[in-house]
Amino acid sequence: MAKMQISLTLNGQQVEALVEPRSLLIHFLREQMQLTGAHIGCETTHCGACTVDLDGKSVKSCTVLAVQADGAEVTTIEGMAAPDGTLHALQEGFAEMHGLQCGFCTPGMIMRAHRLLQENPNPSDAEIRTGISGNLCRCTGYQNIVKAIRYAADKMNNATKEAAE
Amino acid sequence: MIPGSFSYHAPTTVEDAVGLLAELGDEARPLAGGHSLLPMMKLRLAPLEHLVDLRKIADLKGIREEGGTLVIGAMTTQAEILASDVIAGHCPVIQETAALIADPQVRYVGTLGGNVANGDPANDMPALMQCLDASYVLTGKGGSREVKARDFYEGAFFTALQEGEILTAVKLPIPPAGHGYAYEKLKRKIGDYATAAAAVVITMAGGSCKTAAIALTNVGETPLYAEAASAALVGTSVDKAAIDQAVSLAEGITAPASDGRGPADYRTKMAGVMLRRALQRALERAAG
Image 1: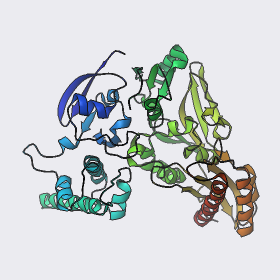
Image 2: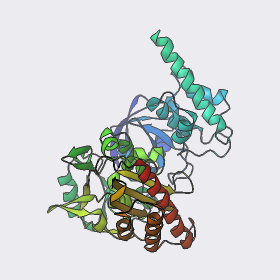
Image 3: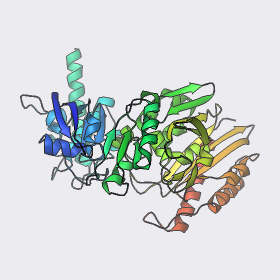
Image 4: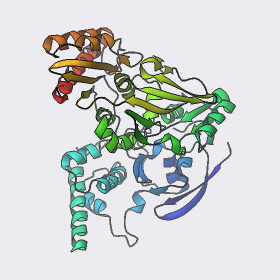
């Protein structure tokens, strides 16, 4: 089948590419854009390791076609740290609170938590657990992931408060 | 897993979408949120030559009230349902149900129209729509028609939707203020389909049940509107005897499969348990 041209904003950069209609967004990101942060876990929309942000929504990029990202804004884990390398509060939280062991689920966890905190900047632990219920971790038992997201929420809220003062 | 090759179309109007479907015939499929169809395509269980993506059709979006009727565009996502003040104010049981579907990422993309049109008996919205006596607007090249949710489902993945038609909107009569409602779903984990689930809407006046509607999810080839069980509640105080009777009648119409979610007898019993809980919660919420 003929390839289709797509144009999107990927981690703040304008990108144009040719994709097959059947290309999944995760394969486009990993193989054409060389952004291998989002992982391919289950490939069946269950595990959440491929989660990226697409137009303000967390999506499982194994179940979205690359052509559906035409005109969209996509953020992956590679777009989270500041250009000078300063970690995002969530990345710092996962490091500080030991929110990972093998790290396979972490990019998806962080991207999902990122959108959760945009929508609910001060979630309860129960809301965090519900918020990341579409992301599986086989190592941590989730306890430290919840702490990591709590850490990031507190840090981001304090920064907002300081900016207001 | 990558789907087989296909041509991709993203029309911007309903007219163009049904025109394309008519022109391309049975080698084309419409795509809503894609969280049922894309996995099937990846497994090569849904071979198709043309995919007609409905995501750019603005007319298929939105939630509005029209003279006592709630009209929800087919491409409205579960997340948009959960965020809707109109639905929260008029028919909160739709939100209670949406919150139990899949997981947050899937709810951002999965649509009401896809959930009800696909004909999967494991989906949650079809039974709820039967309970609410919703109608589906089906649009083809020749125009639109409405089919009641209670008449729409013919078998697993077989519905009244004709080739070339798309489901464009869901319409439902807004339940009276003070109605009691609940959707109770037993599932093994977040993201799972129901082992069994029950939707209930009742109205009470002077301690007596004026109207009742019950429907069941994933305990048969189709969603099941439990007509006799519903009728058995009307005129009662929804006391234990009435609930026992309704549960028994509802269990009687189930015909679940024995599968990974449990043997058939168990799933029938769980449908009864879900119904009992839903009735109790609906009763607590009902005014009068």
